[in-house]
Length: 505
Image 1: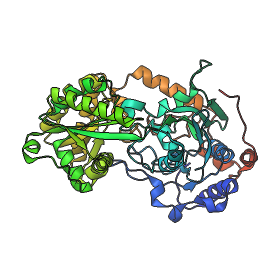
Image 2: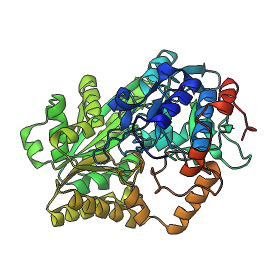
Image 3: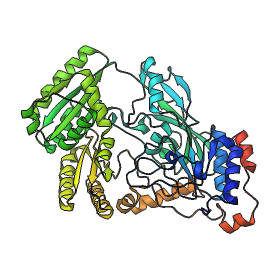
Image 4: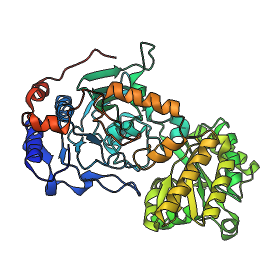
């Protein structure tokens, strides 16, 4: 369907969507909120969708998918818009499906340590509900306003991944609307199963290209009440990264293991107004910092772990070791989580979140330094050094030169056995780089999987993979649409009254 502005077809489309969700929950043209047209990507401009629709139930989502399938317009799912890869940016002929009306915590099952939530639930809302119960959903990707649906789409990680893993380690089941309009449930309130293909894990990280998530069953954990943050300055980035394997295997079970380079530390502490009290003679020697957070259920055991960690860090070459007071430690972790905003405010032109094997980080950072120097660009960063996920900010105002440098930085990570993105997702921002460095056989397999879930190619086309033509017979041509009847909710409206359920997977 071409984007022809506010014309008869456009008005019919809005009317058909309004038949499903109510007129108050559809916007188009000048009424579209600009916040609904993109995410926080530095390189992908906002889109101009034909409409934004806000469903309130799985049945309404299925009805919207039916409309899209029968009339050939693409759908772009949207959570909270906190993504960094352009995955929520719609094409000009498409419709944004925003999930902020599906934001209920459906159940907190304390006996099974499970939360059942709709996709629009934010991490902040879930955290507030779990804290009084002594439970935690441990995925904190750095932005508590992020939604569970968006986290599922990108397989979000964050600083706690070194201990707890990423989103896929905590999603036990999903309710999905496929590109065919079918509703499927995967997984359940159990932690193991060997019963058919693991469709839950297949959809995690698929960036809205395989199905629209309408419900998630999440695994919860007991919440340790005590935590302490330790800061260790080092004389070089190599020394910091070389210390990490020993820290991770020390038996202290760190929750957070981060590196922050000299420039990034200055930026985030200045932005946050934090004074860490590091003596000038130490600060003058330090080129990088290691930040480690430990947690425990008993304070005496935490004290023992902190003492053991401090001794270990000193033996690994730390210039000094500082056990930060509670407020200072929390402030530093919060500032580190806001590193992207500090880089954006400083004028960064692009960001990278390559992941490499943990032991390869020293070699990778050296390669990145050489690539930046050769390009005459400033490349600075910090990262989840405990799990190999390196976050870099690239300052290169020339768009073509910046793209070449980011491509080279990503390729260097892949050559060391890593991947283009550790947690942000590919989206549209890194799609061309990803396709260039990925195994063609894997890309072909992914396209076949896409066709199986979404034969008409209507679910977030252009994200993760380049758009591909729909299966023959699955999507009407423009001529077919012009010869056919006006757009109606039709059969879709009956689905809104009772969604078709497929057999549980």
